[in-house]
Length: 312
Image 1 (cartoon, rainbow, N blue to C red):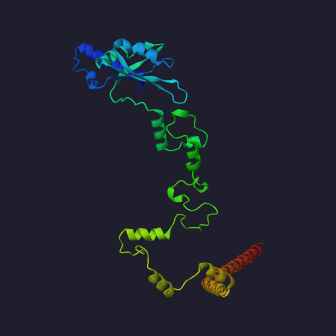
Image 2: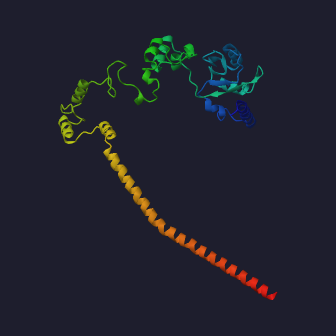
Image 3: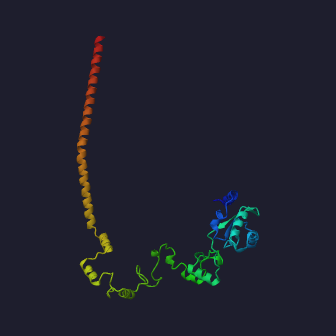
């Protein structure tokens, strides 16, 4: 909702209550009887904490002022939170200062029921909280502009050691994609975990109470050997390599394909042969009929010419 619309709603609510003569116990202000804070918005940006105290202290003694400022520039953001010593002073401030004109701006003043005062922290506590939150990523890239107001750590040593990790992890988005082995030149083979220690794995299995059997959860050595002896091994690369040089199978396949093609072609010829014959017979009949028609027409012409000669 527009802040100026909220200002008008508060004014209309106060006007209705004053016209109806509603008591303070039944007023809408009673909903905020447990909070001594008020919200002041749409303030001119040139105001300081002293100016706000001078304006709002005419309705009661102020015990806390929090003018919200930008962390990067330190300039006012145009709103503040104030606490009165007496809660009844908040009602006077809302009724009289809401909608007032201040340096050409209409300010908004309303109750604030859920505001809690932020506890001030010393430098050591702030440093510990920053270290607990982690290293600032923008600081690692040299792009952080918050300075001391940043919530994350700006420790250069920590940023250099634990900032982005190994180079293999910089493009990894998920945890399972990240490099977990030794660094380059560490001698770890591909697909093997760099921190894997078989002795510690066996010790862990024994400590968990699996009857002293370190091979718990893994196939036993004897079963694995028997399976390898029973099942022949096939090397796909060898099979592909041997298939490239052995052309007998490919020739046999080509011969089978040629036979299928010839068989299909012969069947097609057998089906097309009667069609071609019927087509040829049809054309022959048409030629005979046309020749007969031409003969009859020539005969008729000859007879008609004879009749005309006789009449003459």
